[in-house]
Amino acid sequence: MLLCLRVRQAFAIGVGLALVLIGPAAISGEMVGSPMAETYGHAWVRWWTAAEWPAWSQGTTLVEGARSWPVIDPLPTWVFGGVAQIVGDTWAWNLSAALGIVVTALGGGALARSLRGSPIFGAAISPVMPIYLGSIHSGLTEDYFLGFVGLSLAAGVEKRWVSAGLWAGISAWCGLYLGWFAGVGLAVLAGFRAIRWLWRVLRQYRAMPPRTMSPLGWILATARAVSGPLLGLSFAAAISLGAAWPFLTVLQDHGPVRPPPVNEPFYALNPWRAADLASFLTPGSTTTDARTTAPIVMRQHPTYVGGVTVFFAIMGGMHPAGIAVAALGVASLGDEISWMGNPTGLGNPISTLLHKIPMGDKFRNHARLMLLGQLILVALASRGARNLVVRIANDPVRSLR
Image (cartoon, rainbow, N blue to C red; front, top):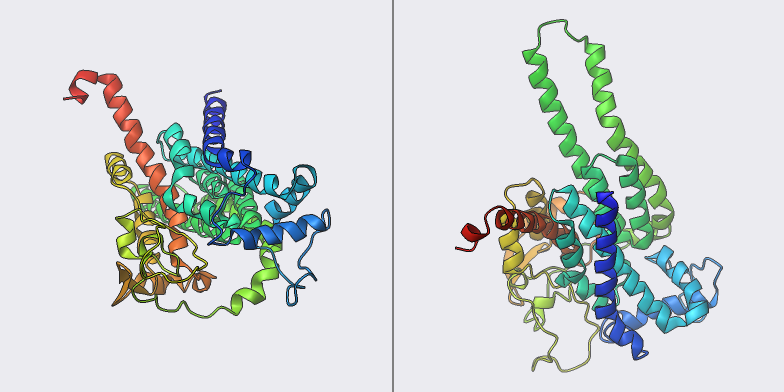
């Protein structure tokens, strides 16, 4: 009953945020997103997909060279292609962004709850994370449904591995990057669980008298412990394969990430490849800079974390998920670390390790890793918010001193 109430609250928060963020553009008949980013490019794909709906299109003959054009977010593209038949392309685009915000609120709330934080805090903050709003503003539709990653990881934390695999598979169909986030996240979580299980077994085995449990008994107990994670990961891989298959050849063609540009005026928004170290400390702006002399296609991946969020995360206490946030933050810096728009010449060993993960060397913008990093950070901050509420409720006078 309480869980249903939390879900309804997260849903209501998501709907409210969607009305605030998407409503003004929808009412005025405009598409949400910047024309300087990928909004029109993704809208073009949605348009010709809708024109062929309900056929599952993988390309178009309207433009030379686009006959084979795999869609990076096939499920929303097809679903909202159908919606466009009823309400038109512009409204379908805006409804897609609005639904993404609602799903992200649900996923953020679920992940916060699984880490024993405040689900209301997670639901309210996750959709307004700087990097997520950057994806909405940039028209990166493959990031809209980040909430499915949160639902997948939350299910994994709660040991509901089949549900975790299902949500991870849906994530892949809503965006290949999201599927990768969920898959790697579940694999890391499963590995962490396996290490904890092995450590506990070794301690128990040494403490127990001989012949209390046969070696076969220990093997069967271990098999039961690892069967859930293996089933969840297999389920996720099976569902994701259909979405990833058209891209396998394309992804293999991408070479290593090139070094960042010099004197990047919009370094705080991380429009190119990796995150700038200074972008974690400043939210940035799209205000025209004197060094910008021509229109550019600029994607926005602001990794600004905010002092209040970090403060709440620290108040939440130590948690293993903090290691994941730190690792994602360092990996997002790319192969060569930059500071305020200029390369420092310092290499990044964590990024080198990222290249060893399957498909990890195909990231063209390492800053995107902070989509997952900020989602987990908000869940950790929700723990601090919950602790603060409990302290005030238990002793309001002392808490305000």
